[in-house]
Image 1 (cartoon, helix red, strand yellow):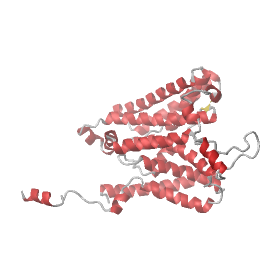
Image 2 (tube, rainbow, N blue to C red; image 1 turned 90 degrees about the vertical axis):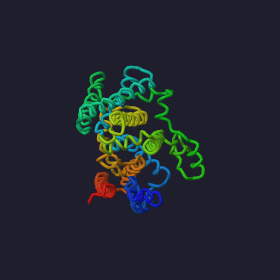
Image 3 (spheres, rainbow, N blue to C red; image 1 turned 180 degrees about the vertical axis):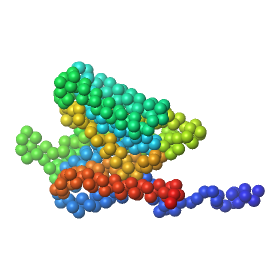
Length: 374
């Protein structure tokens, strides 16, 4: 009775209060926030007067960051669920070739080629997940196998049918297509016309585009990246399914005991990475007007690095889509910042390695705070 009265009248001793500083330290976005600030300060000093932060420069590194961001969203949610997908890069190349084969070589309407490609790629993602949950094999091994399988098909199919591994003509085949337009069209062009009028954006000085702003609009690649980040963040933080994702990655067996459909959650996350990879491929092929079998190489590692920089733990059960987006932003700013600073481009990987090492050390420290390890 005394214990009950104590619990009713005072603070429950089983509940530990977390101070303001500690609550900030355990936020998964912390590494991404610190890294983003550091990178912007660094390049602000090193390349502040190089045009990196004018309208054209901002658009350059925003586009690059958006590319990383799209695939980082799927990779983040999968890593929170406790799994990896090393087939992301090969999926990008495979999806691009699939769109080109169906839409250009075999003459399907482009909208149909896109939908067929999404169906095939998402099915492959589901197969990845099904093999992982049914066999108990590490997702690292299963998706590594699909990395080679998909890359092999990406080279074999166009080489066998067309005797080439680069297929053009996508721009012409997609002209006027309603579905292709949501991946290829620049939007809000009026904004940049206005910015050019007030002198904030440069204009072409000669040729048939003389007087037009050098930025025609916001690429759909950036819109897709922002939309996926918002949706992914809302799913992880505002839905029951998001709680299931964290539970599946934190302790799968305990999650099963309380009724979480762990296998279904993990399969859905593999399908999500496949979906994001296909979105990336669509934006890429319609931007370049062609598909190539070597597209997407190493993208799987870039996605994982962005997620780790953004604060996710390699052990699963902890992470943030916003943090992954910040990691992707760091990626893009560093890659383009070295160009604006006139630094040897090969040093990009050095910067990336340093940032990754810092992020892993910080994440390890955060994990120890959370778990109480020493």
